[in-house]
Length: 196
Image (cartoon, rainbow, N blue to C red; front, side, top):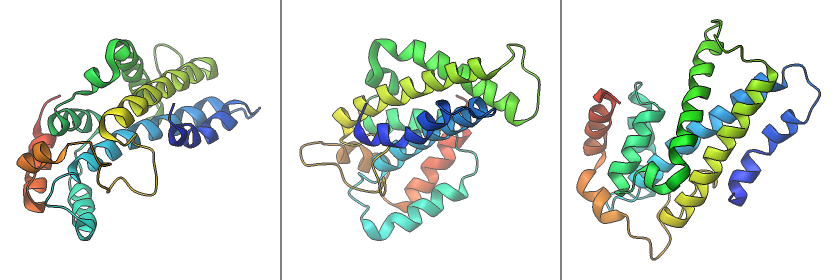
């Protein structure tokens, strides 16, 4: 696990190791937020690799994404593959399908829990902490692979709006797809309309 991923999950570890009655749902919620943020940050990092963008463009890029209210985890996942030419499955490798299935199960459980619905598989503390472990495994694998491939793991701070380290070539492909802010806005609209 990259150091920044480990650091980001430290509060989850502390909650998991606590004696709090709500530790299962608390750790579960924080873990899912981290997985979703990691995916969004990897996506915005790749977008920023376009040669059209520099620090002055961060606010318009953020505003464009903020204005598109129908972009979710699966859209970012697809966008990462399109922008980089390397899909998440290829990044994670042989463990991808198992980890992705576990992550999907966790997201299904989250949707029911957050909407106050009963779940058929009774998500008690033990089950929620299993989800936490699976989510963390997903984030760990993706962080390691993304760091090696893109030069960024989705967790490093302060911002995902930075250029790749010297020697990592991402800009040509991204620039062809997103040549300016209006092209980014149009790309987000197309991405949101896709059935994934």
